[in-house]
Amino acid sequence: MTQLPHVFVTRRIPEIGLRLLRAACVVDLWDDDMPPSAQDLRAHASDCDGLLTLLTDRIDGDLLDACPRVRVVSNLAVGYDNIDVAAATARGVIVGNTPGVLAETTADLAFALLLAAARRLPESQAYVRAGQWQTWGPLLLLGAEVHHATLGIVGLGSIGRALARRARGFQMRVLYSGPTRQPDAEAELGVEYAALPDLLRAADFVSLHAPLTPVTRGMINTETLRQMRPSAILINTARGPLVVTEDLVNALRAGIIAGAALDVTDPEPLPADHPLVGLPNCIVVPHIASASGPTRDRMAEIAARNLMAGLRGEPLLHAVNPAAIGIGRQVEPRDYV
Ligand code: GLV
Image 1 (cartoon, rainbow, N blue to C red):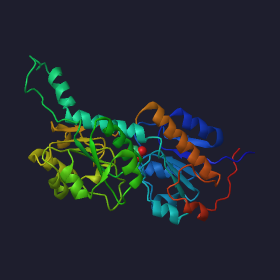
Image 2 (image 1 turned 120 degrees about the vertical axis):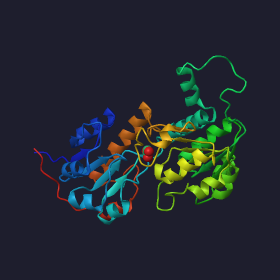
Image 3 (image 1 turned 90 degrees about the vertical axis):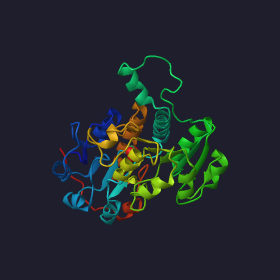
Image 4 (image 1 turned 45 degrees about the vertical axis):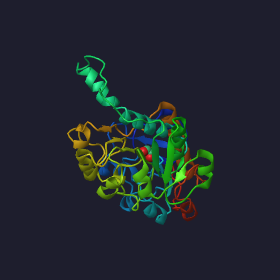
């Protein structure tokens, strides 16, 4: 007779994570390309001791009440706005995430989007594919210059810092805004602090790297878009709801800003007939910022290790609410034959 915890993994994840979990747990895997519905999530999680979740799963107090054995929720993401952390903490459920390992990869994509939007790469490729390329043209597909331009980083966490390092290679001036000044980053990376309105007024490129919270939700709206330069380009690899979608559509149509490049949107996914998908001055990619094989492997390993540590009542590699472990749900170990 052995006692193994039961866990629900809400989608196929890289093998390295599944292998770790299968060695220590009874794994119920949601083996589908689409996320489980709220009903399916509840049904599969209700008898589990722990959950390995994705940003597409909504975890709230009602769900946790329906899953009284669950004592750890391990999110395979650095962001955890899909989880009601206060509700988890109140129930003694520890929540884990996967910071650190995806910062460089996410910054790569943010910079790729910046370059692609500035130099109009998707439009240029569409032009060639449509057979419109007749000759070299002095005025053909002119874009914005990236080198020596000013980049505004909204939220200088590990991803924002990684982006600042890339920008330095392009001799960009880098401004940052956020809740606190970071003298170490100013010294190390040569970045300059600016209040958000000043950053928006000065930046040629504005890249969002803030978490989604009640304070940051909708921070880019008609008012703040109007503070940006008409030539500016907005990049979002953070969370879609930082931007008021309708306001961005209007700003792009009216030329209030020049362009946008979005890895994340609100809603997500965007329907193919959504205005943002059709606008020539907007690039949309499907939330792929951390999508490299090695990075997703590292995320899966951390998420699995977080889950197993939480099940053992040990500190997680990365916990969002470490205080919860002191509260801890008291659950009898199960018998599993
Ligand atoms: C992806 O968006 C993440 O939060 O890791």
